[in-house]
Amino acid sequence: MSVTVVLGKQGRFVVPAGLRSELGLSEGEVLSVQRVGSKLVIERPSDATHTLKGMLSELSRGRSLVEELLAERIDETRPER
Image (tube, rainbow, N blue to C red; front, top):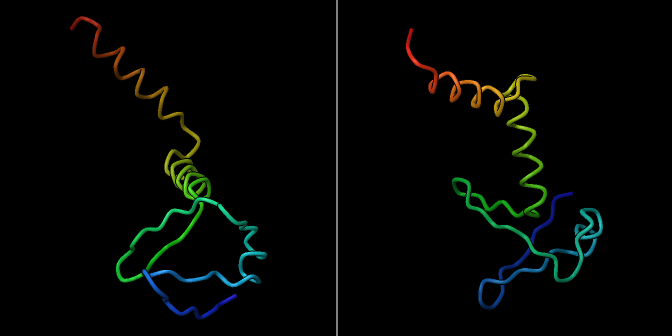
């Protein structure tokens, strides 16, 4: 769904009811606003976290990055041979 809104007093705009319903947004919900280039991205913090976790899991390719880091640190503590 694409909508056009008008910026009102104090820079406020209203998210139309149909879009709020489609996205499951309710009154009082906390949203994060970020500028990405010349665009505004508005999302729930939980959605941003979910997106980031997905991106990181793709980068890890099934590896446990935590386990790899721990293994590196343990190797660093071993005396040189």
